[in-house]
Image: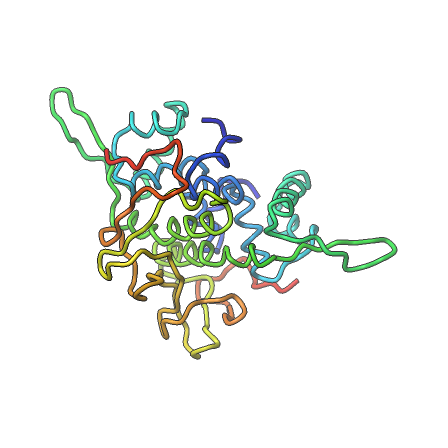
Length: 157
Length: 157
């Protein structure tokens, strides 16, 4: 399979990865959730080429994850803001934070702490079932073909 | 920043991405959660080179996400199984399923349906707070420096 074909796969993970699966893209999205909006800030923070930043931002705008908004006239300058679709990537990002905190924080502890303003406590993210609100674990989940399944079959190897 | 330096960043997302941030790696992990265990199956399913499969599996074994276990003697053949650390990537994967289902399923509907055996209902994944169990949304979360923060600062741009 070629990389360009991923978005056409009948798999929601493959489709997601075709948009955000690039390494730098996820780090740029992390920065967006942290309030970063401007091209030069992305480039300076990641220390990568302007071409990479340009390409990744263009894809995210094309896919509606970010929106390009002028913040200054004469000359016009733009910044990039998360759309609702972009904000919906929060669970992906927070799940990565959780996994990295759990397995790679080491003796020094987690680099960031998260505080839930709603309840007033520090927290970590927990993935739960939309129907019963219990935590999801793989062995308690059954997967079956949905209406959008075309080429792929659900395999058990 | 070079790709090899990502794992040394004081950021749990960067560290996570340094392990699973490769595009094919996430698809291989998707297959692992779907019960796939053998080299040839990964290679056939993704249609990618044996070198890519070898490299990605080697990294996942080195990082303790997968464990290589013999399933046959004479000749010895191995399969790859998710460890507890690997199983803990379930929220990352399920969050990607959810996002892809929401934004890329199109008219035909989601390719896969998820059923929670615990409660008996179909579901989608919801990210919640470990302290109060409410759904997490970005505007209700405050981030501050933790004990493991070294080089990076929490930026607001």
